[in-house]
View (tube, rainbow, N blue to C red):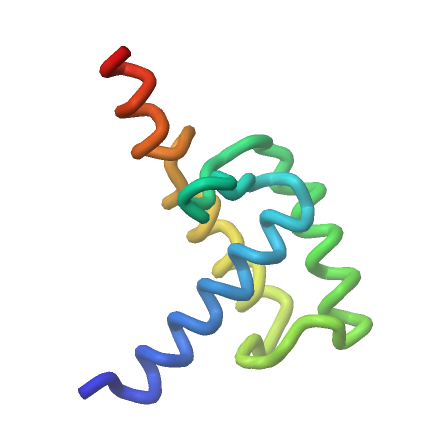
Length: 93
């Protein structure tokens, strides 16, 4: 059974990924919906997210801006440099 903490962690990751995509730091593969790195300006991402957090434009489960920034860093750090499935198809050609 999935715990409430795991569900909250998944929600936080999804929200952080959406924010990173909206800020242009991550892109989503149009065919596979996988987020991958496109830009590395984390300062810009933190400023955009901080502004939205202060305007209460980010859904909670984030309890502080630091909490949000930690989630953003984790999502960007864990994202591949390219869509792995598309990269594999390109390498097969």
